[in-house]
Amino acid sequence: MIPIRDTQPSNCVPVVTYILMGTNLLVFTLQMQIGLNNEAFFYSYGLVPAKYTVHEMSKYFSIGNQLFSILSYMFLHGGFLHFIGNMWTLYIFGDNVEEHFGSMRFLGFYLICGIISGLFHFFVNPISMVPTIGASGAIAGVMGAYFLLYPKSRILTLIPIIIIPWFVEIPAFIFLGLWFLIQFLNAAGSGAGSGIAWWAHIGGFIAGLVLVRLNKKLPETGIKHKISHFTAKKRSPKLQMVVTSGRPDSPDLYGNIEITSIEAIAGTKKMVTIPWGFYKPLYRVKIPPGVKPGTRLRLSGMGKSVPDGIKGDMYLTVKVKNAF
Image 1 (cartoon, rainbow, N blue to C red):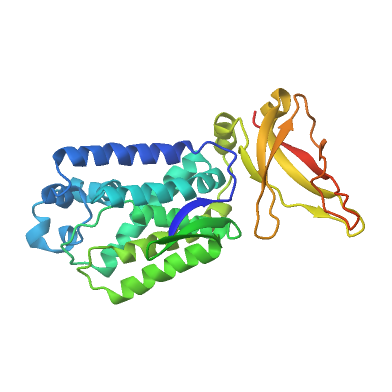
Image 2: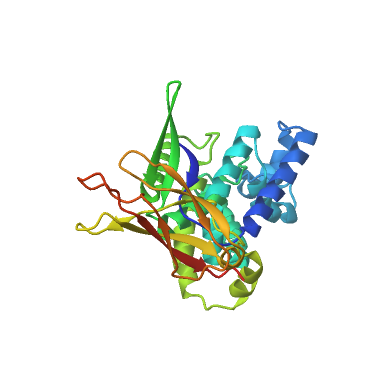
């Protein structure tokens, strides 16, 4: 299963998510310069359990290196597909989780998930001499948080069937639940020398679940609100899905469309998709300058059809989100 996008909107620019992606890109570029198969580099900066438990190996590494490796391993990748897969997953799920935590707490959350995932792998494979690298454990924590926070969001997923691509929207709790189950089954069926740290994925996911719960008990510092003042998106999504409702005795339909305060002042144009059974036709909607919250936009002839051939109208109520 390959996630393509999620349907959970985000109102803030995910600054930390982009910084983490940029940092991983810089490190990966460095790796390409020194060679992606440089084992000495992986043993120096990857997480190798034997560096801590086997004297014959640990004597070659300083305490500083051993401590730093618990952090540095999550910024290394073994190849292009490994790197792209991790960054794409972080891009899809990171923005919403960052918006929930706030930028500063999200940074701490991400790093702690990565550290816990590494420790989880360490305790399951305490004498392994295989270097563990990659952001997968930290990103698994992001996925665990998303699982709790947005279970009803839908994930557009590519499922390749031989050579035929099949796209399907899967509820987030099912997609992420299946992902976790696959990690567990692979971990249970693989040995300590496996090339993929399945237990690190499991540990990261569980860490994400726990840290979401713990975060609710922490007092608010006000930093999240101050930073969100600068990271708030100035524009709402260009394409929006409108779920309509109506009355049995009327051909008219009603729905909502969301814009930001800046768009309300200046006016904007949106594309809306309205599900009709298996079809999702697109419509252009022009929102005039100076529109007020609660204003209803009338889309003539886009309501239900009645037996005499006359079609009702569709009314979209404008919802304004404060982007200042």
